Amino acid sequence: MSVDDDPGPPSPPARLRVAVVGAGPAGIYTAEALTRQQEVPVAVDLIDRLPTPFGLVRHGIAPDHPKMRAIRDTLHRALDHPAVRFVGNVEIGRDLSCRDLHAAVDAVVYTYGAALDRQLAIPGEDLPGSLAATELVAWYTGHPDADRSTVETALARARSVVVVGVGNVALDVARVLARTPAELEPTDMPQHVLDTLAAAPVEAVTVLGRRGPVQATFTTQELRELGELAEADVLVDPADLELDGAAEERAATDRVVSRNLAVLREWAGHVPRPGRATVTLRFFSRPVRLLGEDRVTGVEVERTVVDQDGRASGTGETAVLPADLVVRSVGYRGGELPELPLDPHRGTVPNELGRVLRGGEPAPGEYVAGWIKRGPTGVVGTNKHDARETVATLLADVAAGVVRPGGGGADDLVAALRATGADPVLLEDWRAIDAAEVALGATRGRARTTLHEWETLLAAVKEAAARTR
Ligand code: NAP
Image (cartoon, rainbow, N blue to C red; front, side):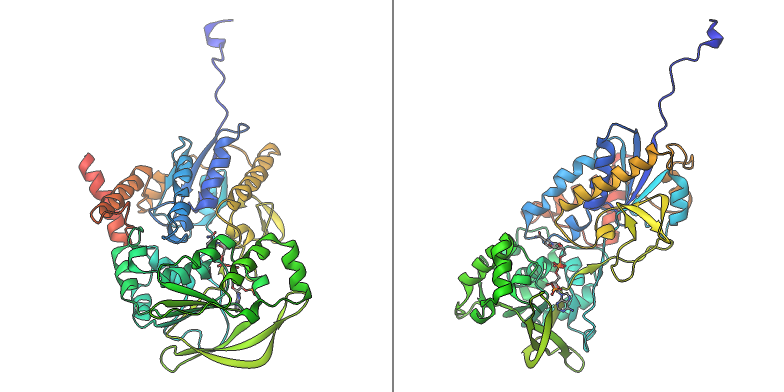
């Protein structure tokens, strides 16, 4: 055989180019699952609208839960993988359409979560002084899109607070509002958040469950924490803890429910101590309307009964709870991305094992994972299993030839984005933001202080780039 005939070493198999839209836990676990498998070599672009990764780990988990927030260290390992590229500050649907993104890569996995709030659909819901938990949480975690003036105006008069809903977000909100400045001081909350919360005149927080304690969706650890607040007492009406047959049966078979009841029973009969705030858990109470002319002054609630199947119905017995602030913590829902189907009732993208369905048919090369796939349920770790399922579906499509590595466009995605005028923030840039937050925190003896403005976040990137030039 002559030298000319020598085919040389075989060329490496084409890499599967995957764009993951949303760098929260679901997106990061998707990137991790893609890089951990051995079947197909991959190159992953992990895109986020924000210049920062971690999604709800950064802008959802309460800042007074530092151990939970530390999961970002574990998530960072996936970002550091050489086959993964963080591409922040890029909004799909604005900087690049779904169609153009899809054309640029071999497969797209949408993991953009469920960022919108669910509505109560009762009169008065939109009065000033009525906030969605999503607004309050975005504000206290330093999300750069938080509406500071609305939240801060509402908090300035918040003596009596009603939180609607008995999930973990409701407990986060109640706890953060009832904490003392000293308890919040070590957190990474921006300084203006700490100052506003310290000045808020909160005396009484009532958490409203429209059904009974047996149907509450909070978990025991989060519930127990309410009892550990430095200067607030937790109150529960013992009558709300009397169980009927069906509730007894549920408590006997569901360990979370029985543990929750044990914690609640410890608090039943508590008497508030003078000079301390109160956090009252009030069950069988559904909000009927928010009262007030130009701002919220109270909540009219109706007593409910819960049937054998766990369904609540009103009894007609009403009461008025005074409230200067109402926080609606009744769940999240996914929003629409232009060109991507959305089930408006579920707030999720129709899918089968993570494969996007368009008109009921699988859309080749398009996938979902996380809350936009299954709805806003579970803890951070739930997304790991969820992402693995989606990646298994994607790999099955590769094996079946439905998705072909190297089939997408030849252009580098970041170069293509820059050509359109977008300003992607890459991993090194995020490290500059990270370092700036740690440095800002150190000025007040804290581990970190969150940068909460677009300008400051992007300035940290530019300053670091100027230093290394
Ligand atoms: P969630 O657990 O679904 O709770 C929503 C609450 O709103 C439920 O109590 C629900 O009551 C109530 N609700 C819904 N519609 C209502 C209405 N029209 N009127 C009155 N009440 C209404 O949701 P979430 O608290 O937003 O949490 C989302 C997910 O994040 C959950 O999986 C949660 O566990 C997780 N999370 C975890 C942590 C943690 O681990 N520390 C912290 C925060 C969030 P019904 O049951 O009667 O519908």
